Length: 328
Image (cartoon, rainbow, N blue to C red; front, side, top):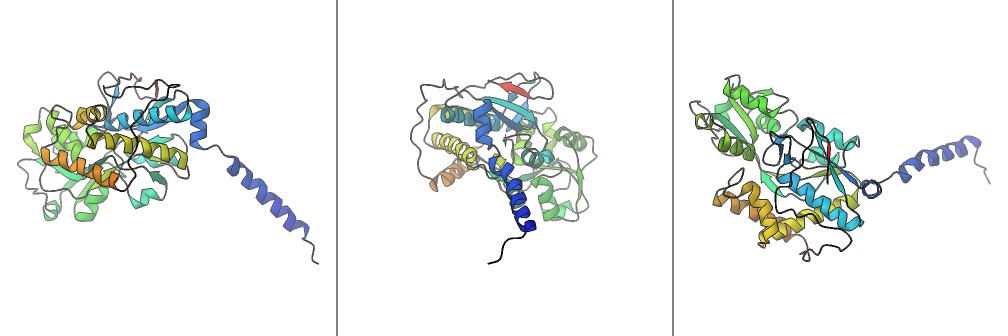
């Protein structure tokens, strides 16, 4: 009978030693349970999904989702969980997740197969798509041919950039680091159009004093589901995130007052982005489609050991400039 030589035994031991740290590595759920803090990344300028106002207070549809997720984690873990928000720009989202800087990102992130190779996505709780903002006196109709030779502003690493490059390779995509820079570039004539999520553009037109000079022509170049992102191989966290989102959507489509208040705060008649009846119906129908493939959830019953945080009103946080902060 052959005996294993020393080098084989040594390699086997080394292999076990190398695997040990990974096997013993703390999951995100374990770390949140131990520290009582959920580290969340979001965007400062993705209105109405996530943004800060002039006082540095964090608001947005996705920020409300983070608070619902925080509340669910508090219930599951049996202890109050604090939400620590960190500002992350669009091209820094994936590295922030994969490098362990944050536990979750909820802003205006949309699912792509490329991103899904690096992170895990939650259920989609919103729908958007790439559209254009142009001056009314431009000759850009929204048809791909009208973009030939045109300069189109976009943020790097976004589905908006990818959509323009796909629908019209002969357009010149001009990349900017900040969302505000894209609007200024369009207003100052440095670009001919701005590519962004249609909801962002609607929000800008609804509030901007120069809105009468601009329009959103044509049709969406893409249709995308907005979702949260979490690190891969953290199923306990993802399950909790999905449960929170599904419970919220079920409440919206069934007319629960608390959940409708959150939705209408951002997309109701007097909201940041008032949706037409058609768009509102489309948003609700997409929620129903997501829910149709999942078991109906029981009515929420707050655990006695954890005081629930009411999500029916804007929860003002006051982070310092640049974030991060602890949101109780």
